[in-house]
Image (tube, rainbow, N blue to C red; front, side, top):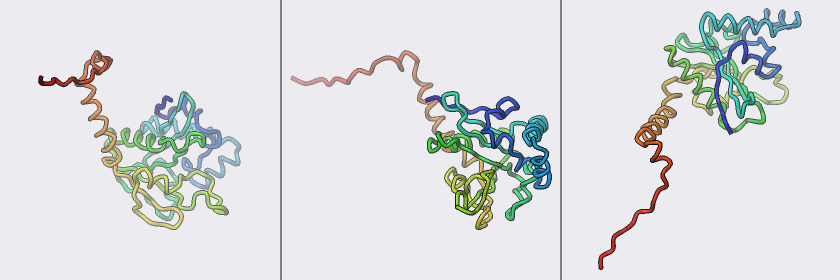
Length: 219
């Protein structure tokens, strides 16, 4: 099974699940979002938002593929680019953080570690750009019957499971934070150790069969 991450572009935007491709929950303020949906083609507004954000700020999403199939994605940006970020009771996002807007794993690929893989991809990207943390608004009642959440927020439990900590409590929409040095430390340590090990071996030694050690015996 092969897994890979790619950055969100106008081309890979088409690999988002259909409901997410046409959703402008985060990209527009509530009034503008309702207006776009009433006009009948919010997908154009989402494409315009991605295009502008890519031009002005840079990469704003990651997609995960498993054996060539789109399996999940995350989107992120500075809160200034995300009008909806001010609509929560636990707003605003901290000045030194980017906002992880949404995260989604296709049901068939759930439970395979793709969520952590996506968050680490975001952390790696943002660290290179000098950003210190990621924050997110989680849904503490995700999946509860009668709550009516449309899935634009990821469960608070998901963020907690990949290393986020709650920085502002709320019964429904807590704000959570992940320090980027924490997100990268474990993976970086493991990769460094592996690279050091493999770097000390020649390709021939990796392919050469291991012979059992022999012991000399005294007469």
